[in-house]
Length: 115
Length: 109
Image 1 (cartoon, each protein chain N blue to C red):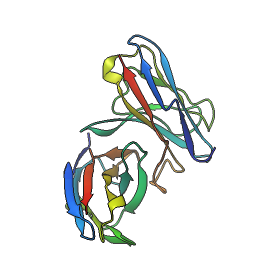
Image 2: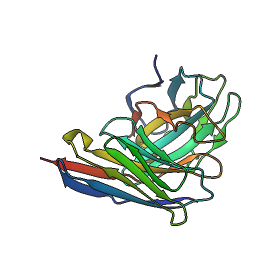
Image 3: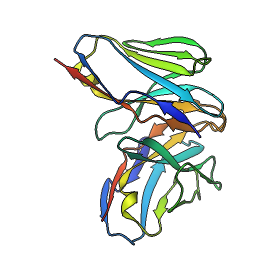
Image 4: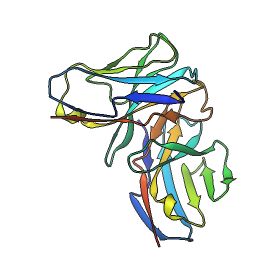
């Protein structure tokens, strides 16, 4: 593993089903983030974690939950998927929580379609 | 909330120069980033400005005016591989990055 790994790459999901998107980083970054990217709206922050054991809500947290049991992993769960959650989801990490640092490193994304 | 505006699309010819403008209104300011994103791929870091002025990195330069809430990304000697979306992002009071919707640049031969 080098950088951030997201899984799955893509998924078609029936509405109402539960789904967990996985994100793992090997850079020992403290901060991790989940964004969704929709055409015309850009990247919007869903949830974040400044360090293992803590999480916070971003701009569009409804319908999503996260956990941060350790430094490396930051899964995103959709408890009961709805079609409006169709999007491309990016996980990102940063080595700094109190300054921009070197910016964010992004995973390759998960394309989720809810039908 | 955050308000970050950039043009939706721009087209330019190979070898030319293109300037992508970004204006922002945010809760505090701790730096402005530009990212490049090719279709179907992850965003990758291009530049970072925290003080007023121009930062140059090879063919790419980025400018910031904090008093005007304005930045631009300048792409020189355009190549076909520069066809991509360019994302303006601002780090605000809580150090989280807020992104503009992105500018899709198409380079034509």
